[in-house]
Image 1: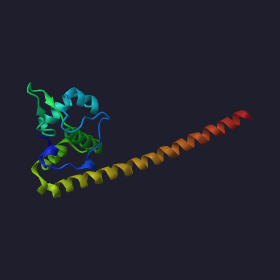
Image 2 (image 1 turned 60 degrees about the vertical axis):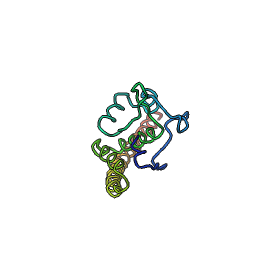
Image 3 (image 1 turned 90 degrees about the vertical axis):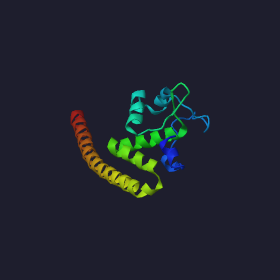
Image 4 (image 1 turned 90 degrees about the horizontal axis):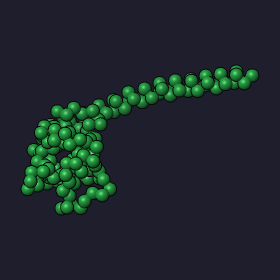
Length: 154
């Protein structure tokens, strides 16, 4: 059972397709190497995610090989987005725990994601300021280069 399956719900707004050739539900048993290829994560990272509780309950084949589902791919997509926000791994693990605990944790999940959103907005504002500085410098050097070219043509 996956993190997404523990709640019995699937939120499409959190999930996007990893791969154009995704298998239909029920036939979606991906090996760790296939998931690594789809996601760009290493097999080592996928195993680590499982070990720390970020990807618990990965199904296994009769030989013990991991078998990932479309829901697992959806979850990995969300985890990837959370990584991009700069959310600490401990907070991602906490979020996964909250999802597994059920609907009564919505408030805590909301607070965690809202705080992360505020951090992202602050980083965006900082990057916009940095971009403005770069644009001014680029404009300065473009103007200076044109001026030098005009002087050289006289």
